[in-house]
Image (cartoon, rainbow, N blue to C red; front, top):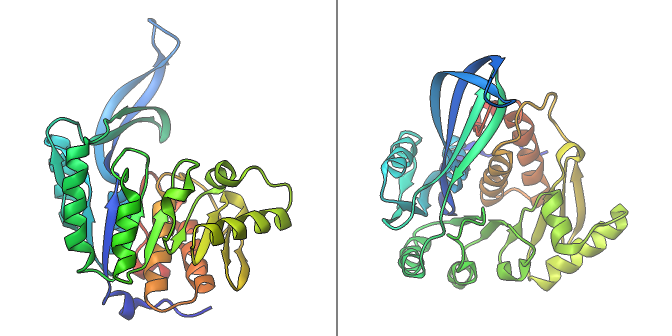
Length: 309
């Protein structure tokens, strides 16, 4: 496998566009059940905020050494302020569009003794007018970057994803997409899609053999005019389909602690290594190694260039 291209990655300018969110963790102790209902009582200890969604993709890109800008829609609230602060601390150049009519997407997780007990989500979809502003911002920013990553968490920021892909394609800039839903025709013309196993089955149906999967994946790749499709398959590793054929990497994780945000790490690593000149198969292998590292960490986390080297 080709060596990790750290120096070339440091020269890249990457634009991440997508659903920005904040992951908030409440850590506490549990030693009794509530007398009001059969639920655990959590005695609060500490709170921790981490970047989530597209912001976590950008955080991983920055940790790998590239220059990264983040474009997304947030509310005009304290959660957005927290996102901005943590992004700047991570070395991310933020280009947020603020919408006073919606809250910043927030995922609140309550943990007792390192086990997640519940999650509460705060979210609304951005308005059409705000999406037009985002589109204008994107048109200017895409021209200033070497690579575009679209992180779709189905929160509405990428409702006009076709136009974003067209803008990048017009300038010859690669577009890597983490898709959502089953209407993959929206992503026609992108460079690569990176669905997980469930998302791929929603798009092409359940397969019963590797040969059937390859046939369906290649048909989808050709129909959408993609260079490649990478399927992340949890304990089965990951498989990439290109015009040259099928390449597979077995799972690297020794111990899986938390899969939150693992797809963000895989996407970021795949993007920067491919943009730095590696083949799709070598880029997939580095992304697989990064994914194996990050699932051993608690919560949405990152993998650094130093860890990979």
